[in-house]
Image (cartoon, rainbow, N blue to C red; front, side, top):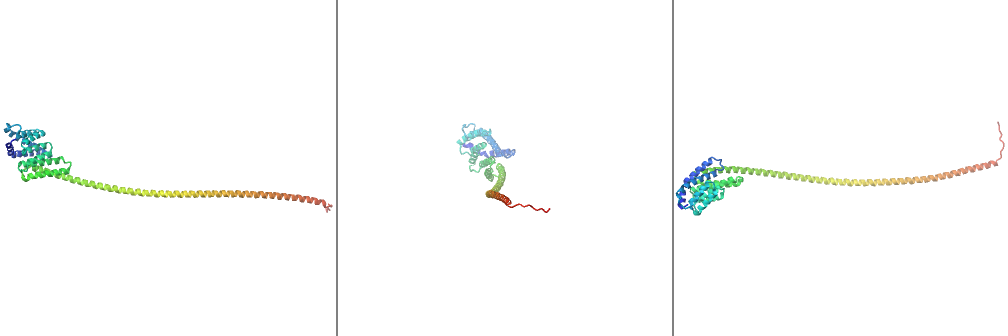
Length: 333
């Protein structure tokens, strides 16, 4: 595209962007709101492609390597869904006119279609260029759309999504401060704020849940600690009781052993005494038997002596009788 071609495109930017906003608004009114930014991008691409084709009719005789032809082909490819090939054409155009903000804007649309939000944001920021014109406002709005889209993609991480939404709202509000009639920025800012409130509420709920969970965990830890202390105390008391029982059992066993030993000693002493008594009785019996034997012998000896004495007296009497004269007995009958 020549310098004249860039100026021509710049001159028609107002009507193109106005048509793009109108188409984007219609596309969003038929959706559920979650894909409004992509619908806006497709509508904008269609308008850009139509405008480029119309302008390209006057430039058909230019060399095929011109920036305008590369941009026109890139717009057609982007409209057909081949964003990767479209980016190649935009880069070719930028090699010819590297400072062209319009080409940077189109390249941002290509990156956006591929979900390359960082590259798209950089391209839109280049297109904005701090100029403060209508193209700059659309570029700032589109950079906010990149932040907005990343917030959708990062919905699982509420903190990151909140940060992206805040960046997007800052860009939308920057556009609205200069152009209050910029309806896409107004709609997008409203939806971003709504999503920000939902995520903020979700984050607060998560925080409360985490606090409650932490309190429950702390309470469980405290209960567990108290339970462990109670178990430890019970274990200590049980151990002390077991030690006392063992000590008492040892004392009982020692006492039993002493009692058994005393009983054995007493039994041995009684047995010894009984043996001594038996021995004494046996000795006494033997002594009595011996005495009895002695007495018997003495008695027999005395008896023999008495009998001998009797025999001796009888013999003596017979002898005396022989000496005494016998006289007749007078009978008085």
